[in-house]
Image (cartoon, rainbow, N blue to C red):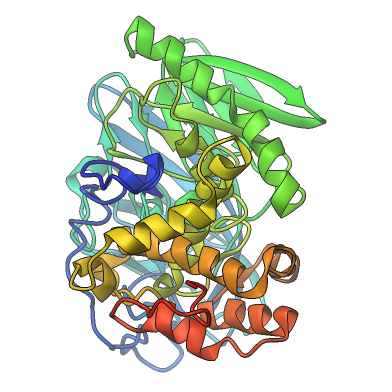
Length: 486
């Protein structure tokens, strides 16, 4: 995620935008939840109401592994009401008498394998607990269908109100949570699944989502748009936008691309945004020179007329605010996330620097390879300008806490860590480290400790003190060669 508001003169454009983090998913999220585990107490045989992330104990759920979401929603712009049904194809990972899904909307009915199931969910509750007519055996596969109708904008979770809509447009973009506002999910990056999206809107309106457009069915008064990405994704990376959009598409070096820009933008903003969106395939080609093949089968982007205050790396199709036609660094940041954050998702939310620090570093690298300041010079400038007393150094990047997952230090100090590592081990070895990380973690999840092990193994160096200084010490690292600073 990249956010915008207050800036620091040494931060690159997209990271400058991140320092305010005045977005609904960061400043509103409240303090860290402490060390309580997500194993919320329930009776034996009931799946836990959390997957085990201490930052948000109710995120995800115990006892289930989702393979696929088949979402079929209808959206009304005037009332901002969403109604639909989602089929969740899952496997029980333990014997279950009940289990939970993360969902905020009012539920009308639940079935498991076609049979009515009991469910409990109070108004505003984040947990939809489902009791099937017969227990689920460990290893068995099931289809859970949830039917619902509600106004997503009235709901909040973890201090966040993430529904973004006006009477003309809606876009479901936010991090770390968004799915529960529009489909029931096992809402944690540890459980990736294929997401199939059908959204019905009045005729003449467009719907954009992840992946490829699989079909469009036009009725008397409404059109159903069908999108599906080929590759599994973390639930927060699934999105749809509905409204009036200019759409452009093509193929670049065999990779299909599709971009969209809201027609609600003024003429100049609309044209500038489309120019920026059309840079997407060129940016992907540039990133591939360092990172290897793009990990997905399609790419794109969408610019909304709404004001989210940030851009987000929705898998295959990031979403952006209107920022003009020259803000290439923002596109670099969000497309770098396709490798770091999407293909390789975090193991726990404390590992967020593996997303934001890496994407920010790739902005520095982009500047370096496009005739601007080198990443080494950017690191030096950062380091020299930040006084030892600065709050910037007080964030523990490898475990920042729930209230600081999008702090500027996660972006900036995370990027500094990578360039310092590059200084320490040398350029060739550094890129070998990154390529090895990508190859070994492809399609999965990563923790900071795992990246540190890869770096030590590939470089053949003892990097324990280096990573302790950069990631786990709430003070300014000493300017030494061991820290990659001399």
